[in-house]
Structure formats: C-alpha cells, structure tokens
Length: 290
Image (cartoon, rainbow, N blue to C red; front, side, top):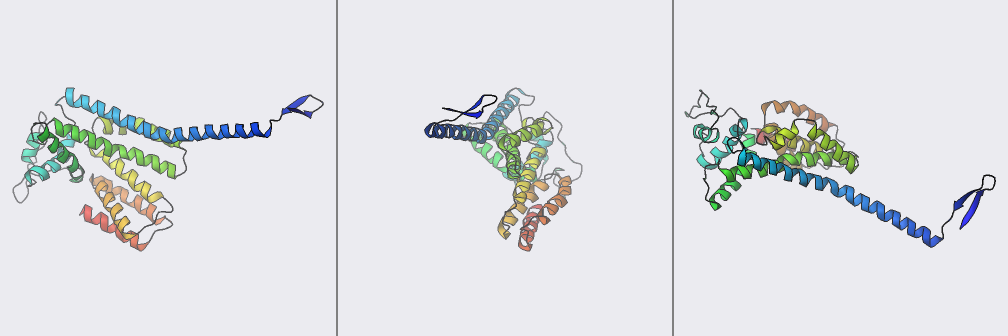
C-alpha cells in the first residue's frame, strides 16, 4: 500500500504489511550473517593458500634448484647446530660444514675451542628451533631408504614444511594482533598482505626460510600479540613461558637484543602488570638466553 508523504510534490512512501516487513528484515540479517562468515573464513583460506603456494615453490627449489636444497648459505650454519646435536653430540662443526655446505665453501673458522673443536660463528637458537625438523626428516629418511646424513631430500622437505609453518605463524599472529586492536577482518588481512608483499619478508619465508629473519618476525608477532591484550592476566608461569619464547627469538641474532627495551616499555604500560609477571618474564628469558 502507498501513503502520501507530501501532497504538494506528489511523493509517496511505500509501506509494507507487517509480515513482509519481518521477512525483509530476516533476509537482511541472513545476508549480513553470510557476509560475516565469509569475511571470517577468508583469512584462513588466504593463510592456507599462501602456505600451499610456498611449499610448491620450495619443492621446485629442492627438485630443480642449484644444489637441490632449501638449507644453504648462512642457513646451513644455523642448521649445523641441530645436526651436531642430533648426530654427533660433540658440537664439533667441521664434519657438519663439510656435509651441509658443498658445493659452497664451508665457513671453517681458524680459531678452535679449548677442546680443539671447530667453532660455529652462528648463534645456536635457530638450530634449536630446527630440531623437530631434523628429527622428522631423519624418520622420513629411514622410511624412504634415503641417506640419513641430515642433508638428503627428506631433511630438505621436512625443513621446508616446518620452517614455512613456523615463519607463516608470524603472519597469523600479526593478523590476530590487528584484530585485537580493532581492525575488521578485511582490513587486518589487507594490512598483513601489504606487509608481506611490500617488504623482503616474502623472500625470507619462500626462498630462504632457513635464515633467522622469518623466525624472528614470528617471535616478535607472538610476543606483541601476547603483551598487547589489555585484559591479559599475568601470572608467573605464563610470564615465564612467554619470557622463554621471547628469549629464544631474541637470541636468534645477537642484534635482536636491541628490541628488549621495546618489550619492556610495552610491559610497563600494561594495565595488569605485576612484580610476579616481571620475575616470570626475566626468569624465562634468562634460562633460554644463558
């Protein structure tokens, strides 16, 4: 039915019967609910697609790339810690470098330890992170009758999968951090994608995942997400756990220690900070970094 609104210009307002009006509201709610579900699932879909594309590219590197490996250059230096811990148990890196580096020149140091062992100039934290990858690769190598030398194809594929998931977690927690700060799902996804594509992060996640850059980014995003939640309860054990995570990721590179004051300022500005939480963070970080 139509009711006149203004008899001078002849405009009319369309008035729906109550039943039709209710159905229109239900249709609108259904469309909004569908749009909400779609926007919530889009980041998960994008995350899965990115990991799949990354693994496909890394598989091509392993199969057709120079040296058939994901772990090379400085990445082999970090990985040597994991190999020495799992295989040799001696932290003498001469044989590790000779296995992992060819056809590149092994970076053997002229200085040796007091026990007459060859040193590794790279920090050990990345090698500790890679222990699950080398253990999974060792199992895969046994099952496929490949060389169990820490360098064969099962180890390369295991490292590619593990490091891709680890480094991509940084993107996931960055997205969670932005959502926590009030971004809509679409804007949070757009910001995360822009950071990935407009920086060299995409290079370190896809082409050189064995370097510390992607893992460091992951650790920073996890720590910022944990610290930035305003209603986060800080008890001693939780704080010690996140302190250990921060300590591990900060020790990936010696220069990362410069980020410590930043996290200190964030903690001190948190509305629920406490002495117990400060002791937990310090304890966890000290245990790992020492």
